[in-house]
Amino acid sequence: MALSSAVLSLLRDHLIASSLAAGLAVILLAHVAVALAGRESKEPPALPQKVPFVGHLVSMLRYSHRYADMNFEDHALPAHTLSVLGGKLYIVNSPKLAEAVLRNRSLSFEPFVRDFMKGATNIDSRNMKIFESEEFSSQWIKILYASMTGSELLKLNVQAIRHFGKYMAKLPTDRGFEVENFYIWVRNTISNASTTSLYGSHNPLSDPRLVEAYWDFEADLHILMTQVFTSMTAPKAHQARLQLTKAFDEYYRREYDASNDVPRFTKDRMTMERKYGMSAAASGAIELAVIHGALFNTALTTYWLVTFIFNQPELVSQLREEVSSIVIDESDREKILQVNRIEKNCPLFMSCFRETQRCVFLGTLNRRVMADTDISDGRLTYTLRKGQNLQVPVGVLHKSRSIWGDDADEFVPDRFLDDEEIQTLPSGFLPFGGGKHICPGRNFASGEILGCAALLLLSYDMTAVDGGPVKVPETAEAWPTAAINKPAPDEDVGVLMKRRKGWEKVDWTVVDEMKEFRKPRTRAWSAL
Image (cartoon, rainbow, N blue to C red):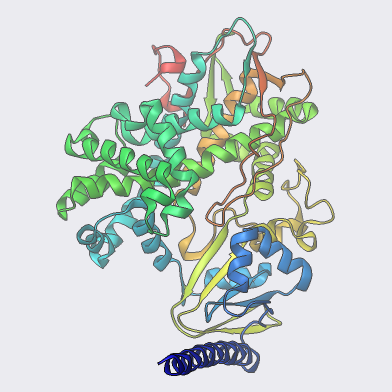
């Protein structure tokens, strides 16, 4: 019996060892096959990894966006392939190849939209089928794009900037005051202003607790996207999602979207969702994606833009003179900001905005290869295989010295003034993506950022707490799902704010066109 047990034990150990050896052999052969397949085709060259199948994946999770920078620094390839779990991930680092990617109809962002909706919102399967249907999704997207252009866009921008101004009107005008965390101050103020412009007087995020809930949701969104035991792996974000969904569920049930102060963007979407039989809970879940698109980039870009500007006192003076050209002085106390004139009349201000985007936008443009296709920069041509994924790491392009020069790591205010060299490299600047899938809310976000920053610039003097220029903080390590850097948690982001001398009692009216402005009117900050 003992001998039989020993023999069985030896046999079992041999079988286990043989199985492990066979398994490792299969893995290594598959890894070699993938590498050889990449070499034999015209696909981008494959980068080596220390651990087959998972080496690149582990590094991406460990280094986040920095892994793309590291690979570009080490290999300097216009495009390369990463083998991940037996599949292929194409990485495009060249501006001209990126432009080719954005033009190519065989490269689609839509699969990632579906994945985001499922992971971020936790929408149920029945309502997800409605959302994914061609008839529903095409109309929903049509509403989205129609609301983000022309007069509808200007109305949204003006309302958001006015609500930002209303909050500013509550601040002290006769003395300076300290803001302990300027990043949180801008973040929360923008959150309230943006969502009130979208949802009117019944805006769920008028409750400060729900503003905090959104940012809790955003902080661990990358974990929610895994859809794996999120109540345990991301309890704070999971609970925040439940709170937000419940609040928007109630908004939908009570039909607050029918109120007169709600824009067509919200009215038309919710009307269509009811038409197709979407539940209130599902509609509430969809709004999580909407507010994420409206808030994350807008709030952070506003913070960084204002911080970069007030870090350079001479720049503050230059910009005030320039932005004053779009201000109408009704009297010493009453001034009108014409937000529709910023882009045309304020080139340095626009340059600062774009330079801010270049410095802090590090997101990744994702595409799925829907059919075998080629991309070319005119010199090199690469074949991309159906079913594989492709990424354009925006941070690599935005910090490339070959595009921007030796000062690519610095904030240069006038970098985007009329410069023929920069104008020939449009594909090297991709804060909102491009091509068919360019961000539909880019103009809404840009208008709001510029308008709110203009009000702060013209109304306040701002310094660091020690009286020096506002400090530009070091950034935190961003998760791969994030598009913009946040300040590092231990950085000093406090500021002193005080109304400018002679501007202590100024009331602002924000308009898109002067014909909109008629007397008599209410107090400017609270107009409309």
